[in-house]
Length: 454
Ligand code: NDP
Image (cartoon, rainbow, N blue to C red; front, top):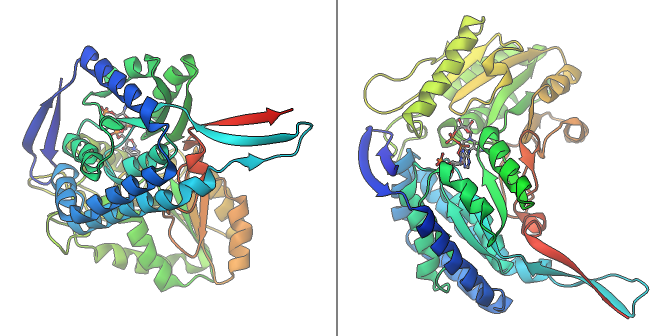
């Protein structure tokens, strides 16, 4: 099987890459483990210097990397530049913070001295998705490498150019060879990698389906996992919300990355008192978004990353409509070349409909009318997912009370859910477990070692 780089805006096959054999893959993992034996001994000062250089390499090549993403998975070019900037930020954050976060923690006990040390664990496998091809990888790699681990990346099969470009960032920054490697393999070869004794842990970002498979295999091998899976984030609008601002943010939050984000707002839960007025504003905001060529500066919504994913999205919309949902905007793929799906707004949603129950990974917004805040919380929690959510109200104390009752890894009051190197990121329920980013993220893949001295 070959890995293919296809331009989703034109359907053009740009490049194919031969998939590696099992032997080739195992050889590279051997090399990465050999690199680990040295890398684990490097000082924080050395790691900091290199990670800061990686940030520099990212910034220097921002346009090129944004172009790779635009061509390979349709990300609007401006968003791509923003993504590369954010990768530089996470490198700098961990370059700066890792030593402090991983400093020994003294604990009083019956010994003359006892403390906790945070030791590297070895090579971590990262199974990553195509939607933020750079960011998802760097938010794993920056803390992992700063902690003294080494990493191997199995990227989505549709973003091989991004995968190779990321490996190159570390080479250009001057990291020792093989501290971070890309494995050019498809998903069928992942089990063998997890079985390899030199792989100590696995992190996966992607669908819950992939997560279950990879977590099961890692469980069989007794290897630690972090799972960052899908979401169906609620966006709650209460009667005292700023309607104009929340509607504008809602359109952005739904259509970020052309709707293909795990933390995109997906279910818009609006109280009856403001439902009609808010829906009008939301629809207008969605309508104003510019759909088009991802290489054009003004584009806000590009094509869907793969044709099969767009078709799947459309099936979810059609099935919901057959079950009684009403299309207020959009609702079918754009004619012509490329997998373009326009911003779409669905109303009259009921439990049982895909647009109510499932994750819609594209620019399709599900509107749900509720009587009051109580019902809004109940509907928000009536989901198998629990990644993020936000609540809009003039009373932020009330917003915080509601936040505490929402079953999600992150709740934002009067703002859209976003990731930030300083804040932990991850989910509950089928959105996964474990946390990335912040001090929590870097401690996922370390040996938390107790040292006791008589
Ligand atoms: P997948 O979850 O299938 O892919 C994510 C990563 O997991 C890829 O590297 C993929 O490799 C790998 N993978 C998939 N199945 C297995 C397996 N059985 N064993 C090992 N690795 C595996 O996402 P898709 O690209 O198919 O997208 C499908 C849906 O997933 C989307 O519509 C969306 O709902 C959700 N998704 C969520 C994301 C998030 O950020 N949480 C990101 C991307 C998708 P390969 O590409 O080789 O199959």
